[in-house]
Structures are given as structure tokens and as C-alpha cells.
Length: 70
Length: 253
Image 1: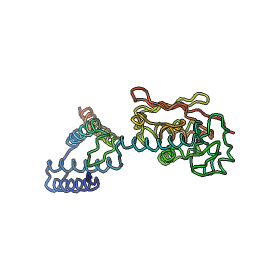
Image 2 (image 1 turned 120 degrees about the vertical axis):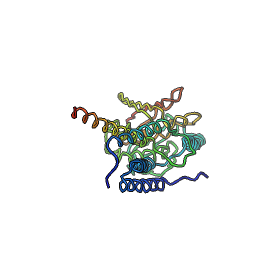
Image 3 (image 1 turned 180 degrees about the vertical axis):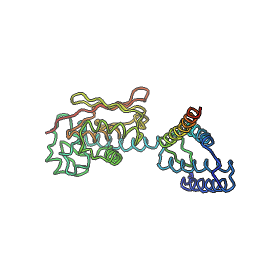
Image 4 (image 1 turned 30 degrees about the vertical axis):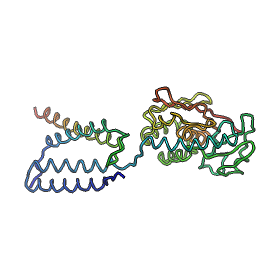
């Protein structure tokens, strides 16, 4: 029993989620009333930026790994 | 009636299914359930985080505030009070936490002293020369104080200048940008893309009382400066993008 994903897999997952969140936070209409879940645009944008930062951190880790490896 | 799904329910469902998928992936060392599990847990947390506020539609906000101001305008017209509204500082009030505005019969009428206004601390104290009213932005100003966790009577103007933009832009999301300029006894506040931009179309603003947002800031300024405040300008630009409010600081008796 071990966790089957590496940092590169997590990086990919974060990248996909970050893109989805960033696009959603930019396209979300604040005035459209027929919604089932009420969303705070500010918090969604914060979550999108945090996820993007985490993705970039994994990229930085990868780059540092490559530089130190060579 | 539109039924709303509970965000807590959605979040709990995503988190439980995600945890199950993650457990399966660890037991069988499988990548696909791990990706699905992590994704579901991630979205479960996001749903919980972004869905904690209540919203009302903007036209509803404007419609409700306009009608109450219209009633006030008609009442003042019937009572024949034509003087400018003056926002009172705490020294004019028995309860310093509250705000009141004073409207004189006309421009020539004598303005009350602090002793007179404290003695007659009623929501609507009618006098031949002046009357006291609760301003339309009274509750909004209290919301400002609660949100900023500050008593405006205990801070000074430079502090308010630093608190107000964060309050209006980040915390309450009333405007996208706030600019404050102070020159001698005048304070000019510019709000870009406010939630109240539609309010000014056809709104009746009697006796320079101001819109709810202008009134709330006037209440805050009266508390902060400890002086009387008059709204000298409260209007939007032609394209409704910018709301410009100008306040005049008046020396009281």
C-alpha cells in the first residue's frame, strides 16, 4: 500500500483545477439570479490564485530538481 | 420558488466520495482513483470555502432604498422643511453610537445647540425650526463599524481614510475602487462601479440627505471628525461608472 501519485501528477491536477477556477472566477456573473449555489466571487478568485500559486510552486520544485540533478 | 442546494450537502458528498476513492487508490495502488479522489476532495473544499455568503439581486437593493427615500422626501415637503440636512457629531447626541441628521425649516433657521438635541433625543423630534431624523445610512454605517471591527468615534480622519477603501472594496464589495481627497474643510470621495449606480437613476434625494451609501459615509465622517457634516454633492457621472460624493465639514456651536 502506497500513494500512487508523484509530484508531477499532483502538478498536473493542480494546473487543471487552477485553470478551471480562474476561468470560472472571471466568467461568473454577479447579477444572474437563477443559481442553486451562492458563490462569493472574491473567495473564488482567492482560491483560483492560491491554486495557481501552488501549481507554480510544484513547477519551481521540478525546475530546481532538474537544475540540481544536472 | 427556486430551491437551493445546500452547499454543505454538496461539499460533504464530494469529500466523502473523494476520500473513498483515495482510500481505494492507496489500497490497490491505482492512479485513476487517486486522481479522481484528490479532485473531488479539492472541489469539496472549494465549494465549502466559496459559498458562505448571502446575496440579493442588485435591482432589489435599489428598489427598496428608493421607495423609503421617496417617502422621506414627500414627508419633508409636506412639513415644509427646506433646509439642508446636517449630519450631527456625537456631542449632539445622547447615544454616541447612533447617528442623527438635523434638518432646519429653511436656510435662515437657527441651528440647534448640543444641549437642545440631547434633551430631545427622539427619532423624530419636531420643532418649528428644526427636526432630527435617523439618516438613511445609519444601519449601513453600523455595518461598516461591525465589519471593520472599529468604533469610528475612537479613530481619526487619516485612520478612516485607510480603513474605508478596504471596507468598501474588499470587505463589503460596494465599489471597485475608492479615492479620497481632503482639502481644508472639504472631503471628496470617488467610488468606481458601485452597487448603487442604478439607484441614482430617478432617485429623489431630498434636502441633500444623500443616498444610503453617501449617508453612511457622512455618519462615519461626523463620528470621526466630531464635527457637523453636510453633503454638498452626491451624483454619478453621465455613464454611471463613477459616484462622486463631496462633504463639507461645518463648525457647530
